[in-house]
Image 1 (cartoon, one colour):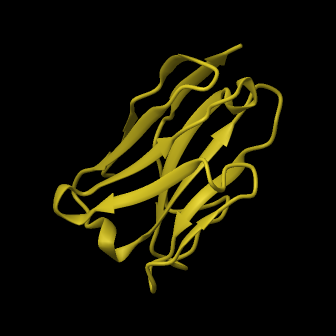
Image 2: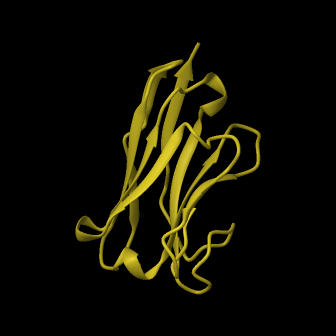
Length: 122
């Protein structure tokens, strides 16, 4: 299957910013719901943001609302997650995912990337 590839993670100091990218090959992301998730060590996977397939409303979890911004570049088949005001609690592996079956973001979306690690130091 065509992979989703995340990039942009790394080590950042608290208060800093990172921009994550998710590039899809072989599919048109405009036909999918696209979401960002993260999983911290020992924690459940957490949904962060989602653009639904059938509308362009962007949803954010309360933990990142106002700090993170998701966007999509259809021409590049790429989605982004701009992360600002990072805290150590944001340390996690960040994943992008795409779904056409339901066109929604949920835990069993059709395609998942392998993740990119974000570490926020205090």
